[in-house]
Image (tube, rainbow, N blue to C red; front, top):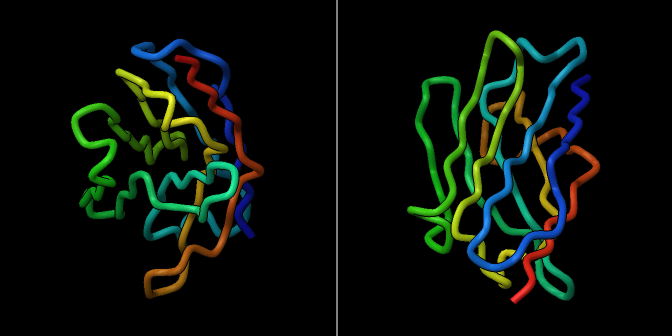
Length: 119
């Protein structure tokens, strides 16, 4: 099993910054082959924000490129998302996810952290 705990959400004005963190623990953390951040806004489907593989390959949603930066510390089993130049449309619950099986689906999810950007 993998447990994921997010932190760092909150309320910020447009143009501001927030940093999200995700701590991974559990018996299968050494089987993780990719991690990512997803978000879900009210009335919308959950969408990928950014993902990173064990090999270091990253993938960002077009809507956040140039504003968000993801980093992973394998020694500490943590994942971070630095969010700059935040916009009201970034308002959502942000989830950390981890994948242990081959393929594209994520197997484990955190409880989510709310990010609210006011205009």
